[in-house]
Amino acid sequence: RDKMFNVGNAALQLSIVSEIYKLYPANTSGDIHLMKVVMMSHDSLAYIFVRNGFHECLYDTYADAPILMQECMKESDLLGAKEWEKNDGWIIPGGADEFRRRIQQYYGDDLCSEKMARPQYMGLAAGRLWGHIQKLPDKVADDLQFSMKCVVGALALTFGVKDAWVILRPFFFELILLSPEELRARYKGVSDLVSKYKKGNN
Picture 1 (cartoon, helix red, strand yellow):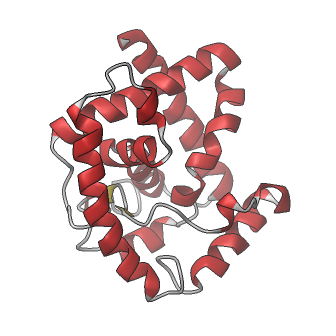
Picture 2 (cartoon, one colour):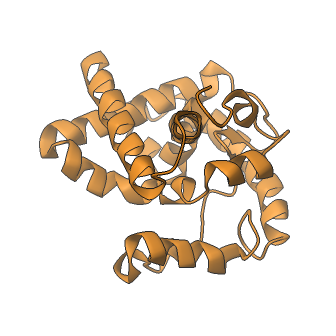
């Protein structure tokens, strides 16, 4: 498991940073680091893992972490939904229509499927969960993010890093569509991460 985790961590980091640089070539090192941390935080990965049902494949189906995470997500999704309602279905002006526009702009019409036509991760707030300005306790997110990276490691070893990212990228679309400036502006005071990584070389 540790080897799979290390492979997955490295593969995911390389894939995410490459994708960020491709979409935002003018980003500073501070911008890139902020976006990477937002997408790879323990809370983000645990949320993505559970939201997409990966936890149902865990060997220990009676583990506490998925239950605890689902409880946190229920509360955070309600808080996030209230914010999204202000902008017609997403966190920024334009709402769901702006989300679809960006998917089409960056990835083309063929990737704007019915499932991806609307954003799904309403409980996430720049690498944290709504209502939790700092990271969740380890007992909630640590095992889940570890398992997520093991899944990534298995895919990378089976298909190669490039093709593994083709499989995984749809799970991260929603997080990468917000620019560093939008993350800092929208989640100031909501996530501690946006204040830690300033624009520039910080």
